[in-house]
Length: 308
Ligand code: 3PG
View 1 (cartoon, rainbow, N blue to C red):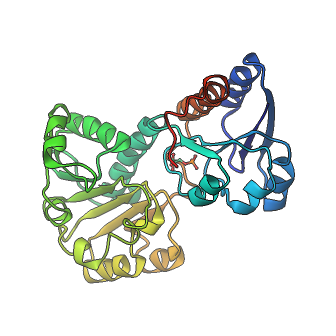
View 2 (cartoon, rainbow, N blue to C red; view 1 turned 135 degrees about the vertical axis):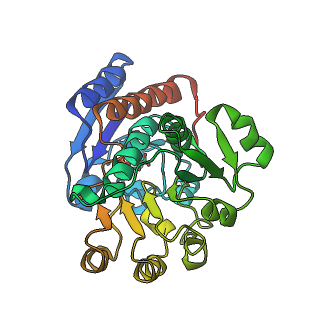
View 3 (cartoon, rainbow, N blue to C red; view 1 turned 90 degrees about the horizontal axis):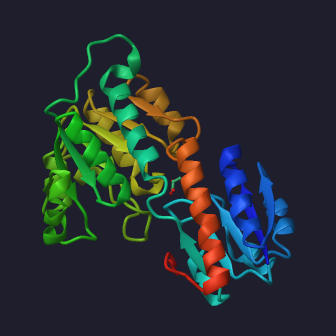
């Protein structure tokens, strides 16, 4: 059994050593392809592998066809929109993610970004504090729950809306101290700062549009540590043009990054490279969880984190 770790954006060395250790201790072969830049390198590397562990690396039907022995793909992370699930299912390949493993890293980054923006990119101009401000969490999964817990320490009022959860479910989350919003409109109306935490699905594509953004406070801040496709970029540009105090911060460079930079240099920021899960701890958590899940899959047929 051969397991390939293929990461164009590599994990920290410690995490890679941990993955290798778990795989080899279980008697499986371990190989890695790090920092690759061309799809052809991945196509070559998968030829004789049984399992593939990736991060945001695109895995499509062509990659799967180049790997006739492939039985398992693990996305070491939360979002699996980079893996073609239909292609995997039709080839009888199991796809899993490692939910929750990098959630704390992303949640901490949300606050780094929030303070950076509310203090005007540290340019010395008068900014805002977080205390008593209203924070809206769009979706309430692993990351949002950690954001809520940290937000309580800042004494923020926390609202949450999740299309995937009922209000009773959300109310059960009372320990997080969130107020449930009954609709995304209510969430945006009640928030000074909105942080996006939903997965990229057909139904969430471009769901943050002009109509929704217009419900937010005039001097609102939108934080995106999820996926760029969730936002209708032209609509966000329009809102920022109409509202000279509205801010946007993102960990995923928008397609219209240059336009945002040119028009709103003091109230827009995009990390140069996606940094949410880029901590030693998150790399270890997600990487080693992926390795254990691989071993359990081949030893016991355990597919509890299957997503297809
Ligand atoms: C995730 O979905 O887990 C995050 O977006 C992290 O992605 P990354 O592994 O590409 O940093």
